[in-house]
Image (cartoon, rainbow, N blue to C red; front, side, top):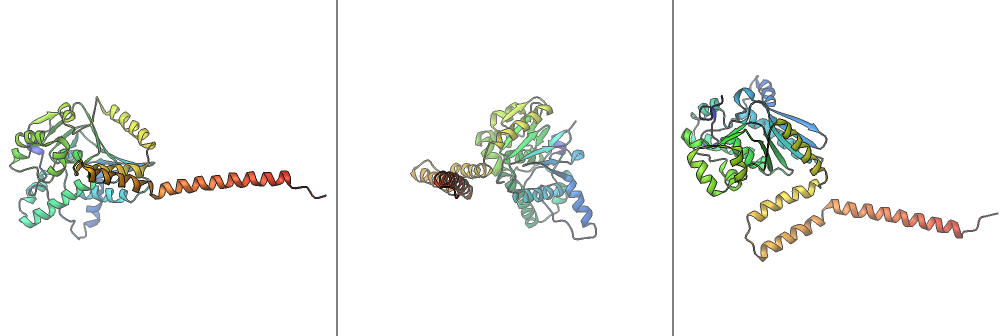
Length: 308
């Protein structure tokens, strides 16, 4: 039985530092080990990142965080990518921060903790701002920083049996680095309850708060949801999807006034000027040119007398 109080470490300025890998003869082994912490796979225009620290309930340590950042940076350059599905092996989706790393972080200086906490924040931001949809498929419990990861995903679906908690205050710390992502996701009122009480809540409550969008019964239903999302996204322009994500972030920070309405109009105008619209117009123009040319040639053949 997984005990969130015993195993979940919070992502804060103190508790979840990321240390750079040492430049030693064991570096290649460390890199291989980091690559095993999260697995990257591709199926056509879709990618899957799978948390793979099953023995630690997928608690995030520096190796896992570095691995995910490398994979996200690699995928960010892929123009053919339509979406990323975020999964986890094992019983838990993500147990928050790693216990052993928490113990090491307690020995860091304030400056080291601040710098390393920003590296954790960079991971959350990389997920949150990724130019294509990131969809979390949650098949197990989610604690602490795992709630932060889910909050950064564009879409989240969870099995009904999953449990969630923001247990930082029970550990004597605060949910600092995840707060810019969790508070907008679940709202100030819900944050005031669950940040301050560290209560464990079920998937139904996570759904009510908007932390997850859909509930399913089991892993098979998660797979069905994944296939449905692929079918939906296959009908969408990847560039338009990315621009829509930017639009959401932009509008959410603006008041409803004429200036905001004018800004949204300019965004639409900019989309219509993007290269892929020009390409479509050019292709249509080329097609029309050849149709007219073919008709013209046929007309000339009809009216031009044959030579004897």
